[in-house]
Amino acid sequence: MTPLGLYVHWPYCARICPYCDFNVYRARPIDAAAWSDALIADLAYWSACIEQRPLTSIYFGGGTPSLAPIAVIEAIIAAAATKFGLDEQVEITLEANPNDADENAMRVLAAAGVNRLSLGIQSFDDAALKFLGRDHDAAAAERAIASAAKIFPKSTFDLIFALPDQSDEDWRNTLRHALGFSPTHLSLYQLTIEPGTAFAKQVDSGRWAPAAEERGARQFEIAAEMTAEAGMSAYEISNYARPGHESRHNLIYWRYQDYIGVGPGAHGRLTVDGKRVATKTLNRPEHYLSHTVEKGAGVETSEVLDEEAQLVERLSMGLRLVEGVSLFADDVFYRNDARADRLAQLVADGFLSHDCGTLRATALGRPVLNRLIYELVS
Image: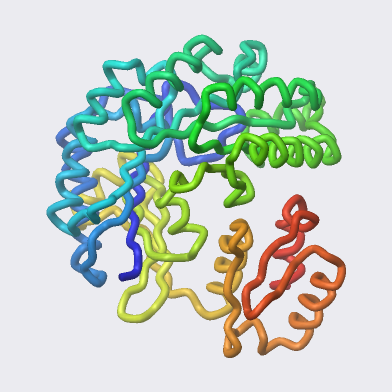
């Protein structure tokens, strides 16, 4: 049975990080009943639209879903179980900041059904955390990691590298510290400057400059080396796991499988009547809430994707994985001779491997993956 995931977007944060370009808003007083009703209405809408099958994963992202009232988390999990059913091994992940997730709060989340916690740690250096706009310090990060490992069957945390003044040795020390907790999963992201963010404005005004590409590439390789030595597989370009601890939900994205998106600004990809459909909900929380009351769902757009659009998405997602992406003999990819020639050249240059219809980025290709995808689909 094809996996089905559910993404629930909680749009509020205590503060908005200067590197973040997600659909987020400053936290405010919440009507838990109104939010539960809106999110459940969206679930009911999609349960009537798609083939019924149990959810293999639920992911509460944001924003900062650890700020959501526990009654909302409980209501969504219960409604998902009623309307779709839950796989026996369902993975229910919730993103949390260390300051919102003390041990008592974690136990409440676990009792509600959350069985995987994702912590936004980003650094163990207080100066770096201040630069990144985080509201926790290194001590809080360490406490949260230790508590999550004790309470949840699975947990993960994020780190950011290629900070402006971060040397390779600084990054090595950060990774040594992280690996000292014996994590089962890590997400390691290079700092990128996204248009419209506070960091983009600072860089444009000359207040500071991003790390050079060469340093980012070296630190990416350092991460690959050190995690491998610690027994963690780089199963995706930014994600490392011990066997059996890969993110089931994120694998749905990367394998281009079906997932429902609910909550303000959430995206989804679904098979509806044999067609691939891209969905998006309304961005503004107040619009999302009112629309679910007036129309019965928060969906703003629902677009059928043609073969070319699917190809771009399939390559963009699948090439992130070490396992790669399948290109079938009758695939739209092969109908374009120029595209096939570019693939052959990229394989010859060592950036890609192409074996029995499966396309993979090599160690040489992974650091320049966005460029490779552009070359393949242009």
